[in-house]
Length: 79
Image 1 (cartoon, rainbow, N blue to C red):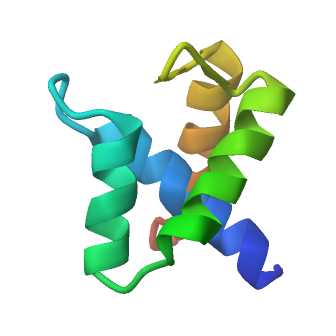
Image 2: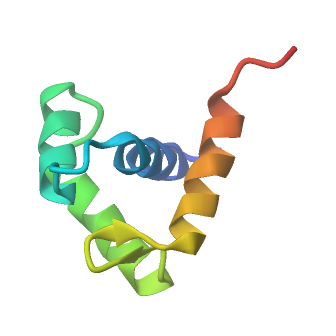
């Protein structure tokens, strides 16, 4: 899996788990502060996810939720 794909999964999970009062911009800033990705990397991923229809009006669409759930399974420890 490429670094870009991993960053996309991290971002999807972070958006899925964000608090209702937090924006995607807030999530991007938190990920940057945690040194998970740069703000520019995050914005590029968000732009791509919006074009794919995974993010609509600042929220995960059904497709985005499905992608985030798949990322969660990928990061889960196997039995």
